[in-house]
Image (cartoon, rainbow, N blue to C red):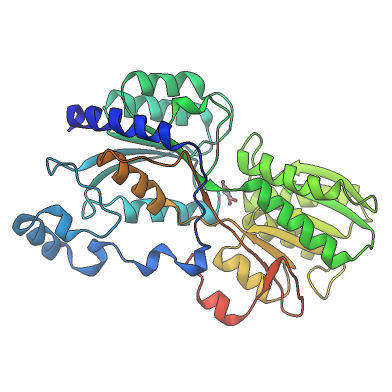
Amino acid sequence: MKKKLALLLVAGMTMASLAGCGGNDVAPADAAPAEEAPAAEEEAPAEDAAEAEEEAPVEEAADDTAAPAADGELVRVGFAQVGHESDWRAANTQNYQDTFSEANGYELSFVDADNDNAVQLEAVRTFIQQEMDYICIAPIETAGWDTVLQEAQDAGIPVLIVDRSVDADASLYETQIGCDMVAEGEMAGNWLAEYLNGEAANILVIEGSVGASATLGRTEGFNNIAGQHSEWTILDSQSGDFTQAGGQEVMESFIKSYSDFNVVVCQNDNEAYGAMDAMDAAGITYGVDGDVIIISFDATHDGLQYTLDGKINCNVECNPLQAEFAAEVIQKLQAGEAIDAQTVVVDQAFVAPGIESQYATTMTQEVLDGRAY
Ligand code: AHR
C-alpha cells in the first residue's frame, strides 16, 4: 500500500501545515484509560477474529483505534522503543502492542533498544529499508536525530516522535505525542513549596537517563520553582538512569556524602524504590511519618501503592497509555486529514493520605484500584 500512502501523505502534510501547531490536550489517564476501550482481539477469541476478518471488512472487526489501509492490507508500523528500564516503559510497550494489533489493522515491528542510542538509530534505519508505512520513535535522547529523520523523509516514510521529544527540525517528522515533562517538574516543585510553606529544604535529585527529554524537562521544571525559593538548596543531582538499581546506587552514594538532606526527588518510580531500599538499609526514615520527603514521577500502580501507604509523599503522573493517540494520527494520515503538530497527554499529581493540596489529588484505595498500569 506504499504508493497509495504517498498520495495520501502529500494531502495530509499540506493540510497539517495549514492547520498549524495547536496543542491537543488529552484527559488524564484515570478519566479515560485505553484499557476501558478493549481492542477487538480482546473481545473475541483468535479464531472468531480470523473468521470475522474473512466475512467482513477489517473496519467492522476492529475498534476505533483501527486504521486499515484502503486496500485492506495491514498498515506496517515500526516502533523503536527506548528499552525496558522501568514499569512505566513496560506499560507503554504493552499499550502499543495492544493498540497496533492485527485485529486493529496493523502489523507492528517492535524493537527494544535497551537504552542504546546506536541500537535505536539502527532500528530506524532498518525500518526505512523495510519500507514501513509509518515509524514511531520514542527517542532515548533528544540529540542526534537530524540525519536519520532526513533519511526517513527522503524515503517518504512519516515519523511520529512519541513519549519523549527530539531537538531536530520539526519539519522532519509529522507530530510529537507525549507528556509535558517541564510541567511535571513544575508540578512537583509547586507541591513541595506548598507543603513546606516556607521551611528550608536540602534537596537531593536522582535524575533519569542523561540527555532524555523526560530528564531534561523534569529537571528544568523543578528548577524553575526551586529558583523562586532561596530557602531551598539543591545539594546534588545525579543520574539513576530511570532504573531501580540506578536509584539505589545513587542514593547509597548520596547517603555517604550528605547527612543533612530532607527531600529526595526521584525522576521515576523505579528510582524511588531503589532510593527507599538504600534509606531502609541506612536506617533513614522517609514519607509522611519520616525525616525525608520523597517526590516521585510516573504514578504507576506500585508507585501509587507507596503513595497510599505514605512512603512517597507526592507522585507526579506521566501517563504511559499514549498509543491510541499515535493510532489516531495514523488514521488521520491514512484518510488524508490534517493532524496536530503536537499532542500533549495531560498529567496530574497524587499525594499521600493526610496531605491536602491544590496541586494534587489525595490518594485513596479507590484511586489505586482504578489505576490500570
Ligand atoms: O519518558 C518517560 C520516562 O521514561 C518515564 O518517567 C520513565 O519511567 C521511563 O523510563
